[in-house]
Length: 511
Ligand SMILES: *[C@@H]1O[C@H](CO)[C@@H](O)[C@H](O)[C@H]1NC(C)=O
Ligand SMILES: *[C@@H]1O[C@H](CO)[C@@H](O)[C@H](O)[C@H]1NC(C)=O
Ligand SMILES: *[C@@H]1O[C@H](CO)[C@@H](O)[C@H](O)[C@H]1NC(C)=O
Ligand SMILES: *[C@@H]1O[C@H](CO)[C@@H](O)[C@H](O)[C@H]1NC(C)=O
Ligand SMILES: *[C@@H]1O[C@H](CO)[C@@H](O)[C@H](O)[C@H]1NC(C)=O
Ligand SMILES: *[C@@H]1O[C@H](CO)[C@@H](O)[C@H](O)[C@H]1NC(C)=O
Ligand SMILES: *[C@@H]1O[C@H](CO)[C@@H](O)[C@H](O)[C@H]1NC(C)=O
Ligand SMILES: *[C@@H]1O[C@H](CO)[C@@H](O)[C@H](O)[C@H]1NC(C)=O
Ligand SMILES: *[C@@H]1O[C@H](CO)[C@@H](O)[C@H](O)[C@H]1NC(C)=O
Ligand SMILES: *[C@@H]1O[C@H](CO)[C@@H](O)[C@H](O)[C@H]1NC(C)=O
Image (tube, rainbow, N blue to C red; front, top):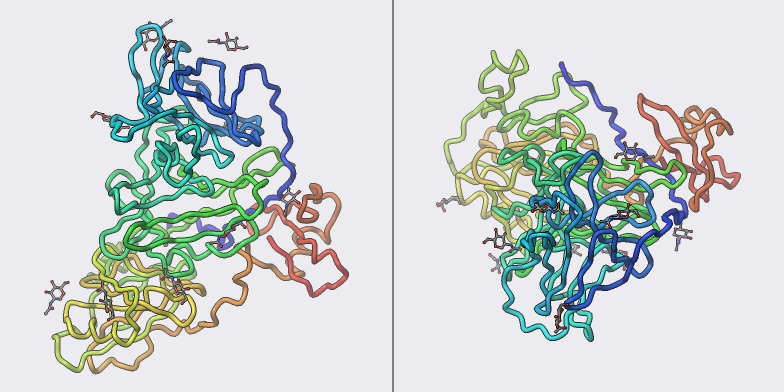
């Protein structure tokens, strides 16, 4: 196989330190911009706690100039938002003005030409607008005497670039029919809209999809009540909490910081990689702590219809139980594109039933149907009553499980995982009923849901840190000492949680 196997452990953990204030301000910085006021080159707006700064910037090796928002306290400028990403200024004569109507206007001052506008329509009656940069990184325009953060006149969070910050929503407002999704930069030197986008697709049951142009590259999949079905390591953790909201008005994913002095962001890189980064003060850099798309099995539809990808197998693709390669010759030479077909075809006879398959990533839901209040029994009944229904499951696995999610037609983009996978009930002929769907029956509901970061036994940690050798120790963070280790072909920053500093050798540690 041509692919290098990526170690199963995909996390690098950095330590959280107190961020230092390194910027020496050489220019005018205000907290707000009022109506009829203009922001010129070298002038910036800063959030109240000085977390974020808004102003003109130029990417490295670029002659172009943009209005952007970046972390004020990080010396290596990290831009999280760009206003005029597709309409750059070519010189420093730009001017950003807040009009009396509450619209931000970016002009080239020499010619007076408008380069960018925050909004075209001015349907709202605006009395006394003011622009303010919040410590969340959201630049909002609101009436001076009433901050309505829920419904401002305008907010930069509605216009995502390539970064999902804490409190930002990615998804849909079904009332206004507006969508927010993120799109990569063209390159590290060019913030123009790149070819990769990450969005919530609402055909069928909503799911998160990463696209390369129009082509699907990776599917994090549908929300199962605890996480996205294909984001196995999205778990409760000490850095941020997260929610997925699905109702008549909104469909979105959002995460929030648990400790607001920590910096973390989810960014879609110009190369299409999605990375969760955490600022690590001791190394003065961002560390990747989660990269959802990271092995060949994350590649969309790698095993074809009714095929399942298992990274622990060689080759990685196999047909689901009860299915066989559609084209055995191609399958043998690792061309899995044709996928699998039923060993015994279905003929829509009344005796057909369902077998249970465990620990899967749920198939593409674009051809699915759902009802959030139905029980599993009702769900089976509905699925059974229509011969083109191929599978069903609970839409919400939280608690005892609830809701109905069912599929019509081919099941594509499935993977099998050792744990944290979902259960799927797949339609089978009468003669097959009762055979276990797959032998992978480690169904112990994860007992270690407390941490997103994998827990390693003490012996592994001792070996990796060379018995906590001081040579490997980087320093102490607010959460405990930190060690740099090399293990399983990757460099990790080991954070020894404070509780494990006690004498209790049975204590487990967090990587
Ligand atoms: C938040 O993190 C900072 C920096 O690591 C630490 O000093 C502070 O004690 C933490 N606050 C809480 C409430 O945990
Ligand atoms: C807005 O600014 C312009 C130019 O500085 C000025 O002529 C005008 O009177 C201002 N309008 C208001 C309403 O302040
Ligand atoms: C911005 O500030 C820098 C450094 O102080 C200065 O060299 C430059 O001329 C200024 N640019 C403008 C357009 O004011
Ligand atoms: C700045 O660039 C614009 C075109 O983008 C041009 O029309 C204008 O003359 C330039 N101004 C200066 C001072 O070079
Ligand atoms: C404003 O209108 C132009 C032309 O119709 C459109 O291309 C642009 O996206 C609109 N901008 C906003 C912020 O709605
Ligand atoms: C996430 O944490 C924040 C801060 O502790 C809290 O206000 C919020 O309610 C939490 N959200 C969820 C969904 O747990
Ligand atoms: C600063 O950013 C540049 C470009 O992103 C990167 O090449 C460099 O390694 C960074 N430096 C540090 C100290 O993080
Ligand atoms: C979902 O199922 C429940 C119970 O069967 C039913 O009352 C409800 O109308 C269904 N909702 C939709 C949107 O189909
Ligand atoms: C079965 O479901 C398909 C897809 O939703 C639909 O087109 C078809 O009409 C249904 N058939 C019956 C008999 O309900
Ligand atoms: C999923 O089920 C849990 C437990 O019954 C419930 O608290 C939660 O609101 C449900 N989530 C959704 C999205 O329906």
